[in-house]
Length: 465
Ligand code: KET
Image (tube, rainbow, N blue to C red; front, top):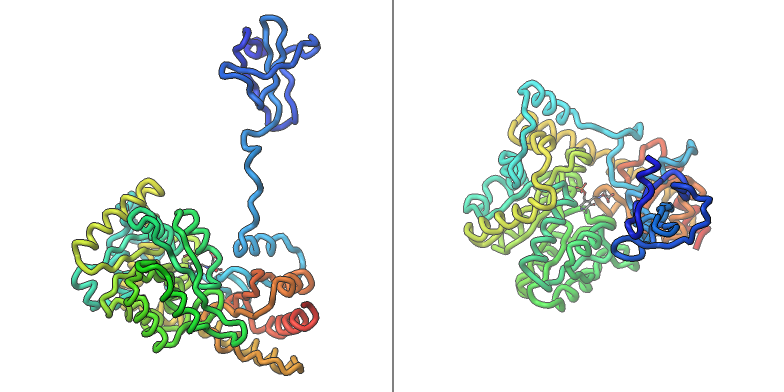
């Protein structure tokens, strides 16, 4: 070993060590000059001691990754990490949008367990899926989204590719935009789900915001939204939340959706729907897909990213899809071929487990009905704690503040209006973990914790500015 650490003249050998700050090799007592060089010239990552014709290399623990700065924690998933690290018994995780039972435990749907048992009984293999994913899943997911008898499906105008849940499907859509609509801008609601901007940034797709939330009315800034969509360059993409807007919980009314579709059509924009909560907002799969179906029924070309994280509780299975509804079957075929081409070098082909679960449940009328009942149960529990929270805050807070927005919002979240300092106070004093934009996940709240949370919100709102 020792002899291999000696090298002749400019041939430098290095021995890296990650366990000590500096590793001395060879015979350090020779009092040689310290030089830094190798065949290509000076190397800042090694210290070479030169003694005449002999050079010994001293590797120091200066990382090649020295220039990489520390990334900030993720604004949503980082909250779960902080929650885990807290040892307080009071702690409550209202950060990530993940359904919990009344006992605040994660929930695996009974219907999912049944589908998994069926899979085991069949002895399904683990061969690679095709790049576009499981055919039975792709069929089921497009039908669930658009309705099985949708003319777009019948006319084969829908290109569906299984994606890595909602995020991966959005990312694939973004890659398609970057490649085939160079310079086209995506309009994103202000505010929006924290990861949307990251997704388009990483795909190098330019974006700007359209007005959406009006803090004065704690409602939709519909005029602002329409104005901003109107004034965007023709042919922009407009990112829309299919239902249960995250984080605000405020959706356009059916009449407002019609007007949004009018403007998008007028301006030749392309709508890009993010459907992460189908069935979770109202409890009905059809009602929650109404916005997407409206746009498709108008003959618009539409992109839709779907996720089964929430409605089937398949968070970690990473199952979703990107659908591109085109005006011709030929265009759909070409789009699908390009989506596959984009997916292949990124992750090759998607995982099979979640795809089989979805396909088996949607394809079996009994399981499908069981799923709908469980989804209604989950959506119902969230609605129930939402009302309990409002009742408790309204009863406790004597200031006259109107808290009714809590029950007007829908979906998994409540956008409380608490600012960053107030949200920090919720965590630091009350051990209520939530995102810094004032969003709380009601899916992580139990009836037993409602009073506690109401007290924390009132204290943070009135005593922190
Ligand atoms: N879109 C929206 C609007 C959304 O809220 C999420 C997840 C996703 C897409 C993606 O989910 P996926 O698991 O990739 O299918 N939102 C929750 C979790 C997260 O941030 O990743 C959340 O907002 O808490």
